[in-house]
Image 1 (tube, rainbow, N blue to C red):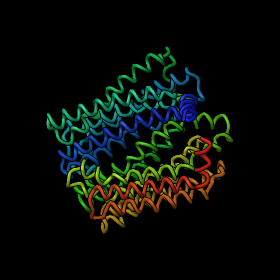
Image 2 (cartoon, helix red, strand yellow; image 1 turned 180 degrees about the horizontal axis):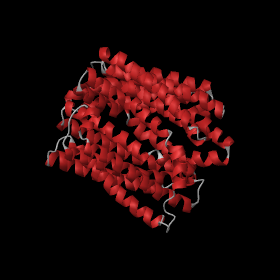
Image 3 (tube, rainbow, N blue to C red; image 1 turned 45 degrees about the vertical axis):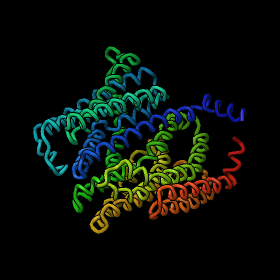
Image 4 (cartoon, rainbow, N blue to C red; image 1 turned 60 degrees about the vertical axis):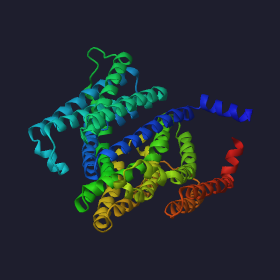
Length: 489
């Protein structure tokens, strides 16, 4: 036992990925818990139609933040380990100036033509709400640049502290605006605005202290051109990814109404839990290591990717099984009765998100090889398929058709990215092990979900699902490769 304890301590002390993953996991766990708490709060006070309206506004916020950012955040990450500190300092202030100028340009258009918002979203808002939305977009861009810097600079502890501050502010302001002041769905926007504003202020102070502007060298058009050459081709890809994730809301609104959009959006948020708790923090911890490894040794990079994808499926699907052990009971406890039907689409969407997570891991190869135009092409194919399937399935099957379209689109995206990345950098994957892992996991997942729908007591349902999960753990342990891995540890 003491030997195992020492091994764990050594792993967390020496291995950056393990240490970073622990910090990012806690960060994302806090984010997810706060997100669920806020979701429960808003579904108690907002009607499904108001929540549907808020979902469509949030799409607008995220889309414009991508356009204003210009994916320079990603460009900066790619260049970070290839540049000196002085060059990174110049890049930081050049990016800030670019973001501000693009923001002013787009904001001016909507100020002079306010009806353009209604044409895009489908409903009218007050000018004061439009101002809140655009300020939120600006400080979201600045705030996310700072948190991304902390990740790429391998500062997971600072990242955790910043996200803790962000979430504390978000909770406090949500309670004040929604429960005390009763400002309706705009409470959500105002709370995020204040949270991102404070994080941006902290970030500006950090950059001024650690990357002091240099006289005459703080802005570089040459550097901006290089950053844009990498980042701009990723903007259409990012927007297409938004369509892949959010287009179904627009189509559901057109055929089923805002209330169904609200119900579907709540179910979708629960589908994103594993992404928030596991997939995202793992990617955040792994990315800086992969960037550095790719620059240093392609063979090391290939070995890492082979191991990551080998165990990805058994781990993530195992977590999904554990999640569904208690999900129905938690969902019914937290969410307002008008939103209960959203539970039915969670499993379908979550499988798609897990497959999409694997596609993102593989897609890192294209980003690091600077094959950004191919990223756009592959995303386009999956997005157009998604929209087409939604147009076919949603009119007849509603949100269930939208969930199915999401799953199929992510499967196609994974297949295309896998085939292409194998062409530009061949990696020897253990396909037999991965297929075995997926097959075993899906059998247990289907059984656990089926029990959730049985008309039995909560205690009996939880007992049966727990028994199946334990049986799954035993089955996994008996897989030869897992057994050997555990013994080595």
